[in-house]
Figure 1 (cartoon, rainbow, N blue to C red):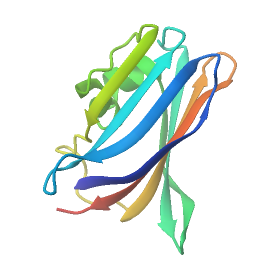
Figure 2: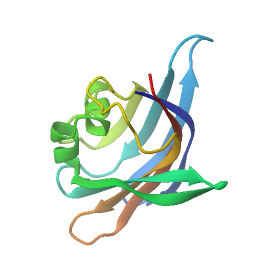
Figure 3: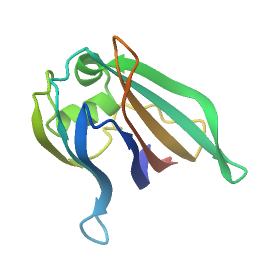
Length: 151
């Protein structure tokens, strides 16, 4: 299976925890793959004090509808244990704990070698909701619209 990102956007960022967030998708040549780039400043160290909630919605009847695909991890567990999204972030250079400062994570691609061959839909939206684990206070919200193409 191949994941082809199309659009991305940061819809909310809490200025107490993050600043100057940029999320974009680039293609370096006509025949190259699509790459996701994430840049920004975190103002606190990220360990398991951060929860990442990932929800995948299906594009159906000209709108995104919630699907049954989704998961929730604490930050370090996502980076170290989750093979697909966490694996992509780990391969791109994110570490746990994530220290305070500017981080530029470039050329993120989904490692789909071990991904199941059948995915329930062809087009979807991956929503990322990052919150503080102790209080549930939102840190950032972002999305990536993507196509899921069978090889």
